[in-house]
Length: 80
Image (cartoon, rainbow, N blue to C red; front, side, top):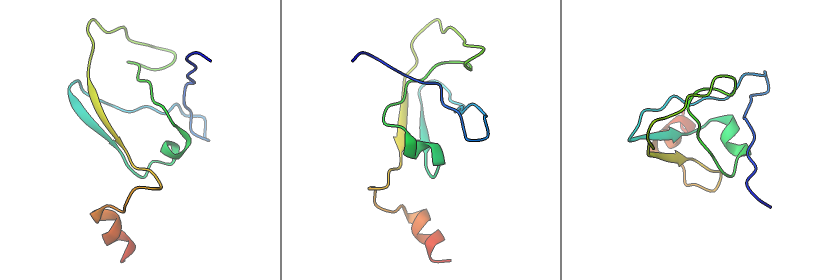
């Protein structure tokens, strides 16, 4: 099959972007687009303006899934 990645856009046509800093964690919770992806591949910059990096950067990513137990904040919000 090979590698196949698509640029990700919201239904309004805006490119999905995530601001990140090197050696940090990224939490993607309650984002509608996270239900539509199985794999993520990061690139610096946007589709039209990619930024070449001089060195590798490491990120930790947490994505909430439908099968995940409810977080404490979601449990509080559900009780409102």
